[in-house]
Image 1 (cartoon, rainbow, N blue to C red):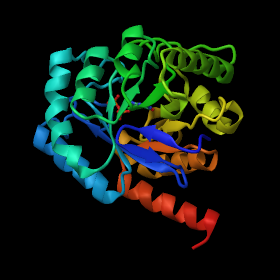
Image 2: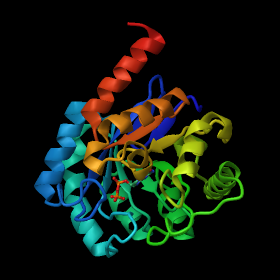
Image 3: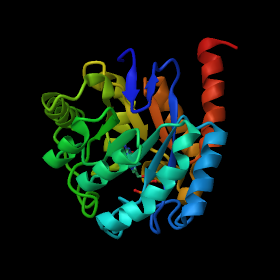
Image 4: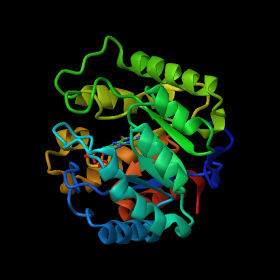
Length: 277
Ligand code: HH2
């Protein structure tokens, strides 16, 4: 793991795993669609997540679940900008979950600290949008595109293919002048992967290190949890906590979660076991 990770106004040392709380300003996200669609509701939710223990907020205005409505740039920014403006003074890093270069540029100008690109900065325009800033970057692996990615995910060797992809993307970012201490990697659980692929990647997270880049893991309420516990997304909290602890036990630096209060408690108990009281 890098000694420090830089993320806009902030710098982290990773003495403990960081909690990234999810704010979805969307009508159709898979587990909390339409709950925080109004600007005021999104802001109130974000503030509650910080009070509950979120170290970072990940704000998204377009769902990536298969079948979700595409959101034009103007609409994505109409949802995001007032929320960024209202949360900027909270003194918590603001990550924006977007794959559109024009959105990246606008949110960075508005004060965002991190860009979380589910497309892994494959678009050269996305690299150009972030290269000359100081924002943190999450480089995620996805096979295919959100609309069709779950139709028939196929790999000869999922671990190698994910790692090869991430390595290529990191090289492209470094060549554009991005400092390595801004980069975070994500295997993209649920993005063009079967349940088996997801659990293989999670189980073997320590074996698939790329240099010492830190891992961000997002599995909160996802179908890999639903498949095991056989429950609807809102009833997957306990299952998600178990998955999250498996991820931090394997070195995940950031965990992306919907249920911040519960996750914070679970991480505190985990830390007490690992480090003592
Ligand atoms: N998962 C989702 C969205 N963005 N970003 C990263 N880096 N890693 C993830 O695992 C990840 C992500 C999907 O979760 P959610 O935001 O709750 O759903 P939706 O895409 O339907 O809004």
